[in-house]
Length: 302
Image 1 (tube, one colour):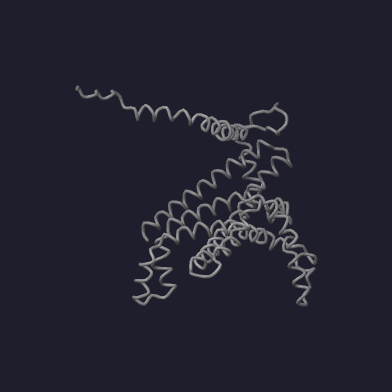
Image 2: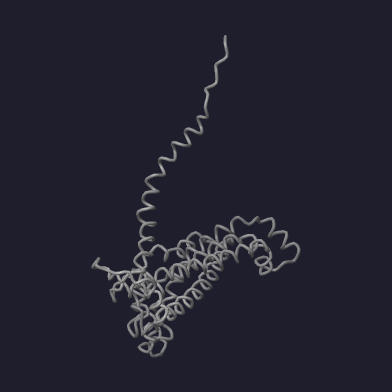
């Protein structure tokens, strides 16, 4: 009996090449709904398009010059940076602390994990309206609690004070987002080998030394992921300043994204809003890349 001849050709390679056909729908959607709008954004940024009439003219870099000269960029940039730093630091500190607490052997930790993550399930508009009532002077939850302990609850109005409004909406962002941060940290902590912790305890390490010398270095990649996600979320903040304060009082809660929205849909200057978006996009990309470079370098050092 003659041995069977092997089939010529690489069948696995042929199969792999056919698999690329399934990428076409996703690639088409990516081109239509992401690449094309981004290119159109750059195009409109050098025109005086108002968002309605297509009888517009090319104005070159005048929109960029106007954004840089009228002060809206500096104010919104300052508010965005304060908001981002505040939310990034507190959401990661709280998320890590809760994750470490829930990674121990405590009763009902499954219930506690669910409760901690529960706020992340709500949409931003629901959370915004809920916290608007929480912050309401006098009739709100905090105002009522202050009245019960003998203080003037009607004087509590963080959203109406330009010094506290930005921090008040940042607290809402932290309350909603720390659950997601906690889950990611919890996943990282569960990869830490318990034998390393036991060896540290035998050597006389305190719990804080175990966290600083063993846990944090081993979950440095998790820290990087959480910080980058928090930075991106903070820099593109819009929801709560729109829902809860509408950018006020004054300009105290007008972030980069809120200023883009107001320029485009309130002032009806779509070309200038496009230029604002391009500058905001470049700023977010630069900050994110710098943070990623720094955090990756820290991972190697640790």
